[in-house]
Length: 119
Image (cartoon, rainbow, N blue to C red; front, side, top):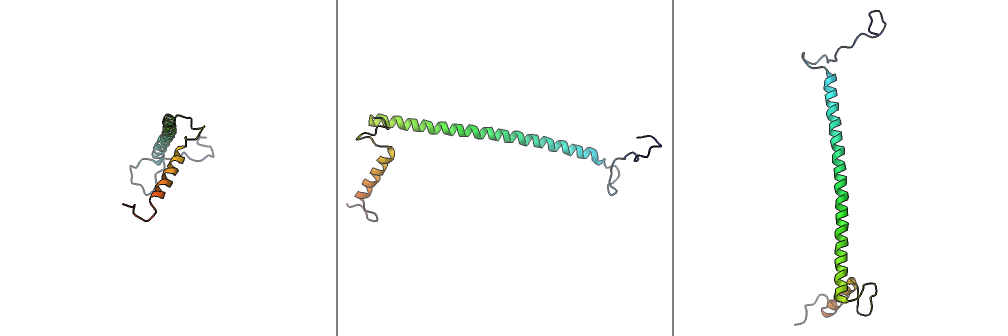
């Protein structure tokens, strides 16, 4: 294919645009350099995305552990104060929300809305 009598196209010269000043490097090495930089940046982005995903998963696990710990601590405190298991809810034992509702109702009964408490 590179023989003198062959009908193939002539050997290619480095592509330099007619408007480029003399001494400008050919475009092929510059393009290859840019492609390599782009591949490196893509690899870095994938690495950072994987790190972010692992961090997000770890944070979610930690949040679930904290919520579980607070729940267990509140449950233990409620059992300690009430002396009964929360599932039994016998005569005196009430859930936290039920206690809060009763306290709110009692407070509203003492102080009518829009009026100052009696002195």
